[in-house]
Image (tube, rainbow, N blue to C red; front, side, top):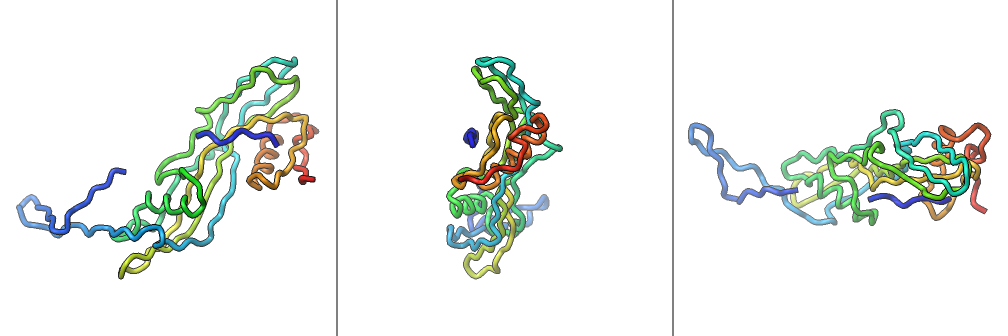
Length: 217
């Protein structure tokens, strides 16, 4: 299956003896520092990866060989994806950004969406072909997503548990409605299903691409 490859904290530390003053001048105890225990402090479980359709272009019809098209996208059903880390608020627990980096090391994927960062809005993307063959095409945007639970252990502090939801980029693709989608064992297993969902939404009824994806020979 032809595909287009995915597109592409400041830290404040208080010294151990630091104090803060109230408006009356009385000292307050400094906030406890977080201790860094490295990548081995994390235990991961329930790691799930999936790819989701996030944007669609209007149906593309090239009327003559050699003519081009320029596809723009709209979000699907208002879908948006924002990275988050839950359970990381304890003063001595892991920093959310460090937790996302640790997950990236586990999966050998970089970069992952930072906490609070949204995946690219499909409305900001375009895809074009200057010399396409005549026929109907469908173009779409997809987002690889990652969810995982973690337990963080560091020193004598109680273990901190939490959950990460993030994404690993944004991809675009344009395929002909005249060709049946085929599953490729070397690809993300969800890519064929995402392409099929897009074809059903944009190809003429009865198009080969709208049929169930074929298994690789």
